[in-house]
Length: 182
Image 1 (cartoon, rainbow, N blue to C red):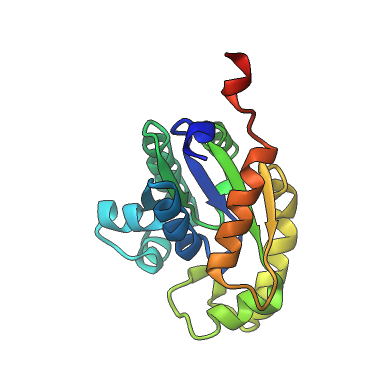
Image 2 (image 1 turned 90 degrees about the vertical axis):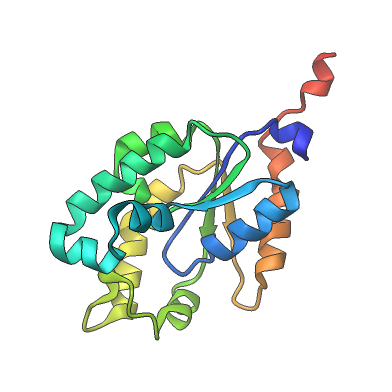
């Protein structure tokens, strides 16, 4: 697998709660890559939580910072990168994402809601009906998420290890081996 990837970064995209961070860590471990979460980098760089950034600077400023972080991340190799759920909203981010392999983790709304129900750190879920908000966000973003190189559908009873294995199994379907050129 490592020969096939040749150091190519793997970017995990998808809705909040899809498991990008958990699966990203497992993927990095399996591939002997480093793991990076763009939200963690943003909070460290800004010295503020995502909620604080949204509240004090607005979503547009957050998205700009997110793009800046992604532009720097794509200069590295051998990374499994968990991205924020809205990273696909900025068209310029796709030029960075396409420097690697883009994997969409697609989870059902009920699963996302169950995973996020007690999470108060998600500014976009500070809503009277968070489940409907998730559904609306997913519908608006689906066409963009579908631009990923790999679409991994997550079953409700699936473990992060099983999701990781699905990705590893699917990678050869989108990458050609260079051994055939020798």
